[in-house]
Structure formats: structure tokens, C-alpha cells
Image (cartoon, rainbow, N blue to C red; front, side, top):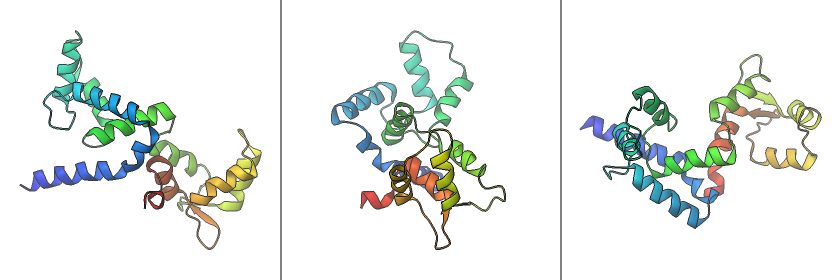
Length: 172
């Protein structure tokens, strides 16, 4: 019973973390993804599992798919792959959003002491003067959703979550 509760909790958590993913697509696109999800979810339980992928590949004529390859696909979902997670995976691929751990690793380059914060003013200077230079308006827009403390430091771990999952304030 406890494992069933834990699985349900993980599934709900996966849904909640991706809840604004529906705003990334038009209704017609969502319907197409829903049809594709239905084709892959062979046992129609609402979650894509390894056996579902094996059967889907089999229908497409590819019978020798390695378990490691299937596990790699499933691990992209970081939990059970229900329709919301499925949609968010496509959203990330189509919209070019890097995974949260990749974005965190980039921020850590600006945080040599590992505090979890970067100075807002220094970060603004870097954004406006390095590589793909941001305009002042673009920086202001980015900072409008950034969690900045009274000392002017950006909590980049929270910012990474907002970048990859959306700002919960926007959904209210």
C-alpha cells in the first residue's frame, strides 16, 4: 500500500512541477501530442513504461531495442512519464530550454564559494557585456521574476526552477 501511495505522490509531483506546460502549445498541438502519447501508452494506464516503449518499437519494426536505451529515454522524465511530463519533455526539446542541472552548473561558475547566490549588479554587468549581450530591458525583464534578497543577491537555484518549471505566481 505504501509503495502505491509513493508512486501516486511522485506522479502528482511530476504533474505539479510541469503544470504551466500547456501554455507552451496551441490546443491543436496538445491534441496531437495526446494522440502520440496514446499510441505509446500501450496498456492505457496513463504512464509510459519500458514495456510500452518496447511494444511501440516492435510495432514500428524495431525489435532489438536495448534496455539501456529505453531506460535512458524514461530517465529523461525524472519520474513517471504521464501526459504532462511527456508534454514538458517535448516543450523542453522544442523550445530549447536546457535541463535544470545544466542551468545550475552555469550559474555555479559565477558562485565560486558555493553560496547559492550571485550578486545582481555583477550579474547584470556580465549579461550586458559578455557573449550574447542583453539589453537593459532584457535584464530588467529577467530580474522581474528572479528571487533577489535585500542585499541584492539572486537565489540562482530558485531562478533555475522558475526558468525550467515556470513561476508559480504567474499561475495564480
